[in-house]
Picture 1 (cartoon, rainbow, N blue to C red):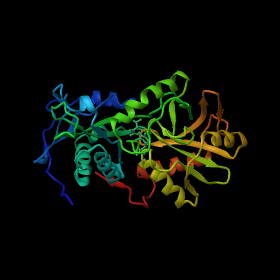
Picture 2: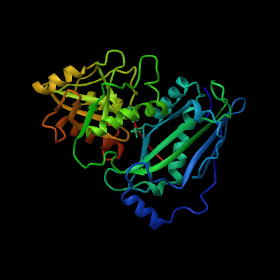
Picture 3: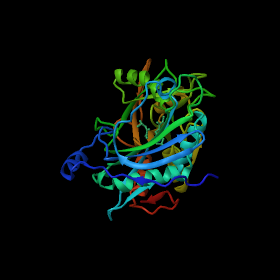
Picture 4: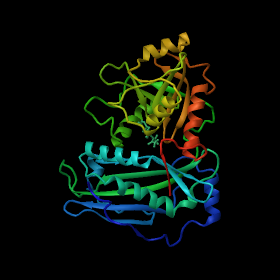
Length: 363
Ligand code: PLP
Ligand code: COI
């Protein structure tokens, strides 16, 4: 087992954003446009391994035009959040799960594994220096974006011999603008996200590049997100562009698509654990678009929701397809199971409820 690797050098920002300006930015951060003062950088090179771990002023990265990532997209990332705790501290939700998934994504993209404790430590270091950037308004948090890319200057198609691992942080509010309680989704018929044997289970930038035309199609149809069906039969619901999906039925049970070609969401896993703790049966089983439509019409399906780090738990109100659409449970309001699970999850994340699973780490 690799050890924690190098220790971090801290080079504080010489001119951080002044407190008054930071307060203005934190009042209404939106999603992903405001960034903190610092970033983490760790270099990797074949032979030396991981080295020069540091926290430094956030700045552009000098890059050679032949850097491999710019040509063959050897890149992976993670998404997680830090929450402000009352005592001036901060907390992280299951960072070790992100570390494990990052290592699994690295393996799929033929990249070196970053030791999982080094990943967790890197995130903790950034949260500690930029603690004052965590928004305290309701529903807001500090979104953390660890990522790694191929930096070798070489146009041959092969795994890079050099990588840069970085972490940046962005104070965020709600992911969905709109302000409606539910979101609408478009079921893509023309585009799929992932095929068996492909990279669907890895969090690599290429998956998101491939999803953009489908997401644009969803937007043209007035929908907030795209839902992907499986690539082989175009029949089974897989996930959304950036979220997993759950269905809640009239018998009190939940279902969610099985792992394989979808991203193994940490929110998905947490929702299943919380539901089972509360005696709600959860099935991981394929669910077809036809069944979804039939169950919404008959009332057997009561609720559906999207879940992920950015989306938290967001109820789905309407579903659109090229041959028509349907509403779920009236379409406008969050259902009871969705609300209950959302409260259970966010209360643990924010330290309001006890943490029976040991999910929360304080910084
Ligand atoms: N599926 C996709 C495609 C995603 O981008 C995300 C977001 O990270 C998720 C699911 C949910 O994963 P998590 O709950 O770990 O954020
Ligand atoms: C996340 O939830 O962390 C994601 O990566 C999804 C993206 C839509 C922001």
